[in-house]
Image 1: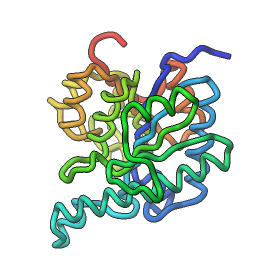
Image 2: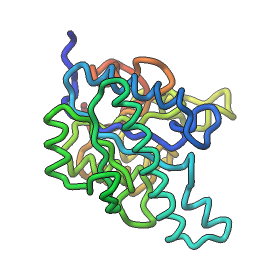
Image 3: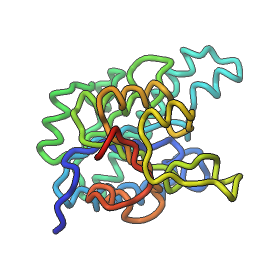
Image 4: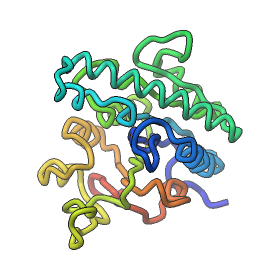
Length: 241
């Protein structure tokens, strides 16, 4: 079996991932696809943490635009990520992958609180750790959560799973001449204001030298390829990685 390039990864899943074709609610088919992709990567003996988004159920900014208090809306969005995390845990365990949900918002009946050392221990024992509840604070996106947890858990790379095959100079869904980048620096993202993640998340990754691979989750085997160091999607890194 090929040796993986990364030993510990953080997989960032958007809420849209859970919604599948509908882009809202939870699509069982999409959920099973994610579970199988994680299982494929896991067979290489790597340690995996997952940060779940919640936009398929509720997005704080969208709520604020409709008159809901921004702080309240963000907390509602955090609760949505916990729903997704529990759904993913169930899908993983149906595929024989042991997992634990940890949340930044204490909810003892359904999940463990996020404790860094416990999360690392779970991964060392072969469990997938699903991180939910955002950072536990309003005004921070789940991209920032991913960057923060990646730094705390000392991961080797963030794999940001999307519905496009990397980072483009403009939206490929609306521009046929959009150019895909093979590699960028974190500063490129900040300077060009590329909409791959918010500036807080990009800055955190840059300051802590955390590479990011942006890839298409819908293409089977892409997460496994990224883990093995094969060229897939767009790599964001400082210097040579």
